[in-house]
Length: 527
Image (cartoon, rainbow, N blue to C red; front, side, top):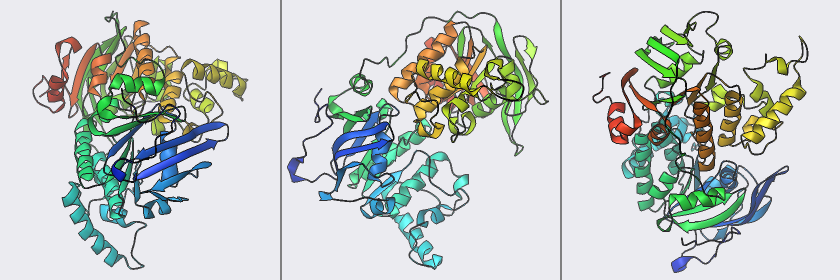
C-alpha cells in the first residue's frame, strides 16, 4: 500500500505539478481540558479532488474540520488556503475564504422556505425583495449546473432529508464556496439518496470544486474519493491514494489492529416464542395509518431483522413495542398480552416486562444531551433498588460506580461518566445507550439503526454484543436501512414497505438485490 504521508501525521508540503494545495494545515493542535482532540496534524488537500478523512468516533475528524471552518480556534498550527496563510477566527472568515460546510445535523430553519434559508445571513441589504429575486435566479443556475433540483418555495420541514441536504449544499455554493466540507453526509440518507449525493459530488468535482468528505463508511471512501487521510486518537496516521488501498487496510489504520468487517456468528438455536405480534395497526397523530396489520413472531436465541427504506413503518413499529406510541391489534411477550393504549403502555412498563430499547434517534429519544453520561445510564432504570439511597434520594455514588464499569466494558471513550453526553462522539453516545440497555439482561432487545453514524471499530464491537445477546438465548428485533448489516446479523429477515411486511426471507436464501426489490414494493406476499 503506497502512502503519501507518514505515521507522524506530517506530509511533504511540495505540491505536484506546481499547484498549491487548496487546503494545507500545518502542525494543528487542539485540546479540550485534559482531552487532546488534535495533536500536531498536517494535511494537504489538492484542488479539484475529493479527499476523504476517516477515523474512529472521537478520533478528532470533526474537531479538525471545525477548526478549518472557524468554529474552534486551534491552540497551535497554521492554515493555508490556495497557498496563502489564512487566519480563520470564525465561520464568516471561513466563508470569505471560500469554505462551506455541510454538517451531519443540518442548520436549517424548518418553517422557512428553501429560498429564505439560502439567503439567511447573506442578504444584500435591509430590503429582502431584491435579495430573494437574486437568490431565485442564482439557485436556478446552480440547480442546472450541479443537478441540485429543489423547489425554492418549498418549506424545509416538508422536504425529505436528501433534499434538505441539497439545500445545505446550495447555501454553501450561493456563498461562493470553492471548498466544501461534508461531515458524515450519508448518515441520515437512504441508499438511493446517498447514490444521488455521490453523483452531485462528482459533478462538483468536475466543475473544479474541492471536497472534503468526513465519513466512517469504507465503501463510500472507496467509491467516491481520490485520496484518503486516516486519523486515530487525535493524530494523522497516514494519507494514501484511494486506488492504492482497500477497506481492510484502511480499517487497520483507523483502529490500529485487524478489524473483522463481518462479525462471525454460528447458526441460530431458536427456542420458545418470546414476542408475538398479530394484526398490528398504528395511526399517527395526523390520522395517517403507518403500520397496516402486520404479524410476526420472534423466538429466543434469534435475531429478526427488518429491512426497508426509512419511512415505511419501521420507526412506528419500534415506537409501539418500546411504549412510545399507541396501537391496535395484539402483542404478547412471553405469552402475556402487552397493554397498547392504557396506563401500562409506556416505556417504563415495557422495561419492567423485560424489553430493552435502543432507539433509532439516539440524540432525541435515547439521551438528554446536556445531562452527564452517568445520568443517561440511569434513565428508565432509576427505580432500580441498587440506585436508591432511601425513599426520597437516589444513590448517585452507586450510579457513578455502575456507569464507570459499563463504560469500561463497552469501551466508551473517554471513560468519564461525569462528562456531558453532548461531548461524546456519536459512536460513543451509542455505546452508552447499548451499555444501559444490554446490561439489563432483557428478554427482548429492540435496536434501531444500531450503527448509524458509527465508525468501523465501534460497528464491530456493537455487532459482537448483539450476537452475544442472541447466543445467550435472548430475542433481538433489529431495524436497519443498511442491507449489509441486515444480511450479516439477521437469522430471519422481513422487509417492510408502506406499512406492510412484503415477505420474510432467510439470509442464505436471498441477496441484496432481491431484498431491494421488496423494499421498493415489487413482488412479495404483502404486495
